[in-house]
Amino acid sequence: MTLGADAREVMKLILRQAMRPVLIGAVIGIGACAGVSRILSTMLFGLSAHDPVVFIVVPLCLISIALLASYIPARRATKVDPMVALRCE
View (cartoon, rainbow, N blue to C red):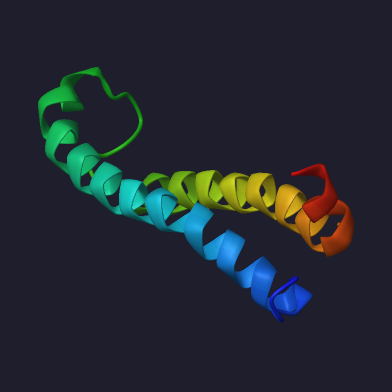
């Protein structure tokens, strides 16, 4: 922000950096779960091996929690006065 970025750009930068690994992990996790669910299908009671609700709801919950967990520090970072941050360094 000291070099000219506004609060919205800082917020987007922090959220993008925080959510990229989360989204990559979600895609890899969904793929891995689809592969492992065939093996573990004997232990599943009352669900199919590829239940679409589970494959959609669980990643969306985890992504929303990660978004909230990264939004709070990002919002706090945009509230800091740049001169105060530079003086502390």
